[in-house]
Length: 406
Image (cartoon, rainbow, N blue to C red; front, side, top):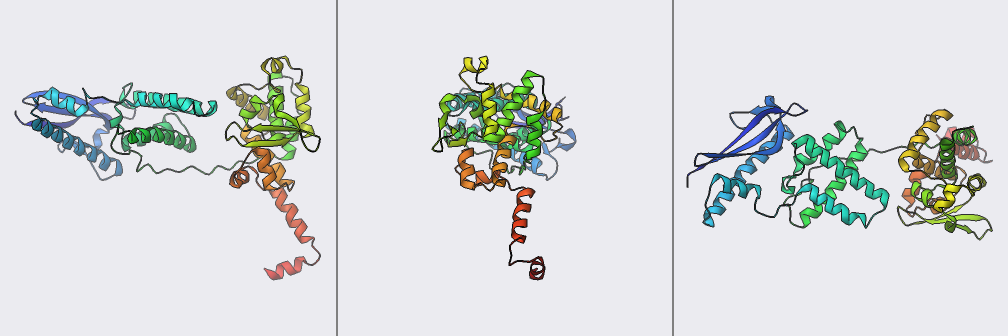
């Protein structure tokens, strides 16, 4: 057998980022075979003579490390074939390198298999996020590599980094949602790693963090504006009622959608309560039905659609619900982004400002962790002002003494 030659070069065709695909050309006994490395680079950053990237930036170092590993892998496959007395041709060596003839696992197949398993373990809302990830990865493969699927062994840090960049720039997805998508993909790849389908973890160097999100709840005045606004459009009137109902009960969208008579009970105080296990966590929410919420339940007790569906409120799809809430915000002159999440935060903050204990708020919101409760029940300037005023009114503490103490 003659010697082998390995060459890396760029194809002239550019992708949307202006980069060229990097190709491997393998030559054995004068015969050539080529394959894409599923990597791209700007021509200005490619050293044609040295067949590698120029510079010492992190992405160039990663690329050059990959190119070196491709070379080493080909030489290793060549030695394995010599040891096993296999006939070495350009086709057989390339096939050995690509894993052709071996059992290959492809990324999209692995993701869809994981989706089927996950579907039986999570709630519908969570499952929709897995489907969204699947669609994003499929579109990314077409955008970045112009292929419908990819050998899972090709998934490395560069793939992860490029996918993250794609979500942020092409799909215009925010940091926290991008991180959630990539972490979900990480879970799937970790399973493939555990099963031996890949040898190294491509997420080892993926270091990103969630941005801290601060939600400014509605004030009591803003809730009253929304509650009292005259709205003639039926669909908006109904969505307004649902939003206000959550402000006074703290129910999540999923629990609001399934609310039926079986969850309404008479409490030890003789009043009506909502007793419902949260769809997301399984924790029990015990919610006293305040008069403002009772009025809304009364309004829809004979609603034909609700009766037909066996529910108490005319809940729409989450997408339509949130879209209509934006209209309501505009109609009511509220600049804050109206969502069920905001309504839950508003409920928790109302309770906190009324000096309701954290344990009671957690019971109402269905939160077993005090840190989760604290996230929803924020202390506002009104509460701070009230408590400071009470402190200053204590007989044995005067404002002069306070100033001197400082």
